[in-house]
Structure formats: C-alpha cells, structure tokens
Image 1 (cartoon, rainbow, N blue to C red):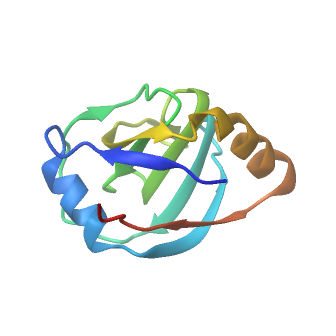
Image 2 (cartoon, one colour):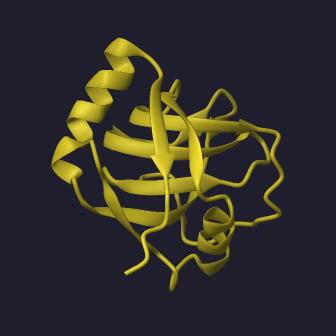
Image 3 (cartoon, rainbow, N blue to C red):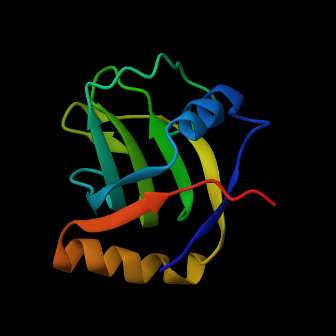
Length: 129
C-alpha cells in the first residue's frame, strides 16, 4: 500500500520539522492497544524536545499524530478508523502533523493487516516535487 500525506506545516511547524529530520524512517507499525481503530509506531523514551501543537485526542482516519512523550512513550499514531487516542495512563493528545490525501481508501486494509496479521513493515520518506 502507498499513502501520500500532506505535512501540516502551518498548524504544527515544529512537529513537522522534527518528523522530517527523522526521515527516511523504516520501522514496523502495530495495532494500537488502547486507541481503537489505529495502528502505532512506538519510539519508547525517545526525547524529541517537542511540546504540544495542533494536538487532539480524536483524530480522523488518516490524521497522523506524533505524541512527544510525557505520561506515555513517544509514538506515531496512525488512525485507520474510529479512534480516541489513549494509553494505559488514560486519554492522550498528540500533535496532528500530517494528513493522508492519497490512498485513504486503503486505510481499512492496513487496519485489517495489523489487527489480524501483526506487525507490518512501514517506511516514510519525503517526496520532493
């Protein structure tokens, strides 16, 4: 599957800049444990030196969140359906930094894969136009 996303540079400039500095990123995405119809990429105790900007607990499918750490571990949340961002500590808010604008019709398929088949390889790279 291929997804194209628009960085939300006007609403989350620091988060977008930090994310771009992490590219290219090759990792695995797994089913979220607490957030509903979402997958996530855990980064553990990685300190991104970010605060909150354009943060939400209720992302729409395809609204990617970067949680900068704090009461839970640093992570990217990748919602593919109905979702309330949370952890074992309770509800969280993450920085909405990117919105999928191409390939969204495959979000349900991604969700099915991570839910029923386990961890999936995922890569992020910046396309230059």
